Length: 581
Image (spheres, rainbow, N blue to C red):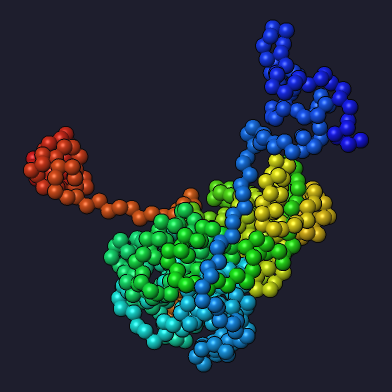
């Protein structure tokens, strides 16, 4: 029966304008009428209200529920001069014979879609705003025009000619390694300046002169404050991962740096995900830009297999260990650096060679971990979002979100570590019961339809999706650079008693100093695994607050440091006391 003709079973409603009253004559409120819901007055005759009215009535969010963030709006394409047609091959572009030969030597025979679309405009000097999925070849899309348009010029000391800004140290090193072969062919010098490494060494490199500078904003600003770098001559500026560079954390530094480059230069912004945050940089610093969007912002990794594994909290640790013990390498993402260290330690105790990668480690430590993971010495890399952008690992086919990401862009960039350059890959997210609602919302914003599976550690479905297997249970030690030194220690103990140097060297063999028993620790960490910090030198100066070594007691102020004045019960050195007596 339609809702309008349903008979009323409750009391007759009061006339319009009159409110129902209680026996005391006071107007009856909703609670007094027996209404248990807060909202608009009921319509219809049913005591519980009509179904249509309840469907139209807006729902109030539950108290304590997390606010649902609206999906980030897409960036605004700028309408200006039409773009040039895409290039079908590198031969169509204005590239030198040496550069084409090097492209062939590196295995780059045909341009990727983002390269074919952006190279003609970028080589012509146009400002470019480019978006392509992770692993689509964006580095060469902006790198080749930067190098070609800088070739033939020579930079003076402290004045680079081209600048590439990136958000992380690993991405800076990857960009440098990708462009170095082509820069060598064109006779260009390329320098990387990032935090976590010696600023003095980087300062010396920039002072000697470099045409191309790849930098993180923080370290570049430090060098500018020291007077080691000036950006007056920078004619080409590139922002890689532009959406993160336009975030509030980087935006003030990025704006400050872009204000120092030469006016009228070329600016290029590239990323896999672009939203409205980029509009602020585009409107202020780009002139008549051309937009090339090869892949949509949402769903940039839809070519991969996406799985949501729903499990109980008690099964998460064992499930994670089984996935990490698979045959082959895997990257596992967590939220915090302490969580990364803790999970890596737990996995090593179960027999999985795992290492942590996060912003709390020094740059040499991070480089060593990445090299070990690339070489296969480490099979499970436990990382924070510092590894979510720009790190390229050949042959990586599985990424696991042990802690689901908070933002859909983080999910896309985490998953972008696999299925790069046309390869296939799988992205797995472990979801606890209380995380299901937020993860489903995140997938909806990212435009991804994952396969949802409820698993237990011993299920065959978990093995089919991830290749999980039971870990050995035998604790392992993370390999370090001092492995050869550790192996040499037992040989020294066998020759004990033959003198300080061990066995006597054979005729013609150089005598070697015995190696230190450092326990296999790298030189840049102490016994606790923390980065070593140089001890500040104690230099006595003028004034009573500084005392020379060996002086105990108060200084008179007139005495020189180390003179041994009798101003305390203990003073000077033994020789000074004997001379004074």
